[in-house]
Amino acid sequence: MRWVEDEYFRTLEIPLRRGRVFNEQDRPGTPRAAVINESMARRFRPGQDPLGKHMGAGSDACEIVGVVADVRHQDATKEGLVEVFFPYRQAPPKSMTVVVRAGKSIGRDPMRLGPAIGRAVAAVDGQSAPSRVRELLQIASGRLAPKRLTMAVIAAFAGLALVLAAIGIYGVLSFTVAQRTHEIGVRMALGAPRGSVVRMIVGQAAGLAAGGVAIGIAGALAVSHVLASLLYGVQATDPVVFAGVSAMLLGVAVTAAYLPARRAAKVDPVTALRHE
Image (tube, rainbow, N blue to C red):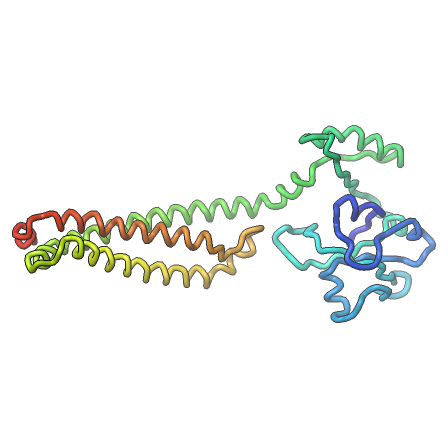
């Protein structure tokens, strides 16, 4: 629940979906009013228009006069949180937060408005003064900091795992292809073109790598819901990330097979036949 002034929604550029926002008629002594967000409207009375309906009972009853768009006030990573707004004048809380939207003339340093905000608050209530002035961007960044740190640690370990996987794939495939030097010599002695032998070796390695990538993608999709709660603005199943990692691993596999296969194919077939 939030107690807000009439200009709150316009200041934060929160779109009005239905009804109205608070105005001068929402004052002490008049019927209590409330504005709800879209998530609350869907849950309050599904399939019905909430405008004109009442919430609460007795002296706490209030009429829903408007519906505004959902805004992530509490947690930027969570959608669908219900919110109810009440007019500040009808039930003033003991403390409040003043929200100011700076114009373009302020430039990139809106904190210069701090003294002016203090004077404006003092003009309304001489006994009040802002305890601190912060940018909304700073507040949002502070709330996301713990999750950002968690994701940075996870990303670091994921990057290390990717590098180790690439090194392992390269080492195993290089060793495997080198062990097939005798086979390559036999094929070439029987008349197989050098290029076709190299393509065969590389194709087999790429097939094995593709199978491993497919299994890895299936496993990643299975656990993607675990990371979804830590992400904001990015999908846990981002196709660009999946495609990039898959392409990298396939590239490593092809390179690991191509280089030793090409070296073995250049060796004289007689020498290759003697290779153990």
